[in-house]
Image 1 (cartoon, protein in one colour):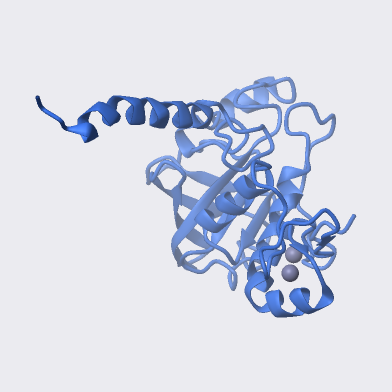
Image 2 (tube, helix red, strand yellow):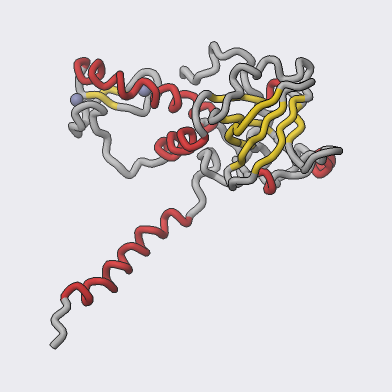
Length: 238
Ligand SMILES: [Zn+2]
Ligand SMILES: [Zn+2]
């Protein structure tokens, strides 16, 4: 008689774990920043030559896509150039060949911030390994958040697995009121909203910024996307 009750439990438990893992294996929705086709790593980007021939009919990686990378360091000799780490952990050079040589973005390009580049392509530099050669300010946006924060906020927007709860007291209720800023946090009362704001404040602005991406149709939009130039009016208000 072995009598190890724990042993008889383990096969069933590991089965349960595997079952829980399977939904994660599915590709996130196309508008989720965690989707690797819409928001590809550097080596999954098309090369600059490929795009000039096939755009806008190209579907690789998508008709519309955006590169996301964390800023590791920046340099302003001649032009702004960054060392950036992509989603896969690969480091590359991002060089500003825009009209102002990156002046518009210089103050925001700090270590740990995130750069987004619409329609980014692999560029072959003469004297350094392949990277991004940025030419259009309207395709560039720098966020004062980490890439992890943005990915997490995006994932949360698509996660409707949990029932709505008051952000402050965690009460579940059908009559909860939405946060007017991000429309992704709920409160049971004015008092809870006031109490919860100190904690929610930062998440709220990340959420609002992320919705610029998550509310777009990245598969079939008929015109190219561009980032608004000014911060004012940038965040989604409708
Ligand atoms: Zn509450
Ligand atoms: Zn909010």
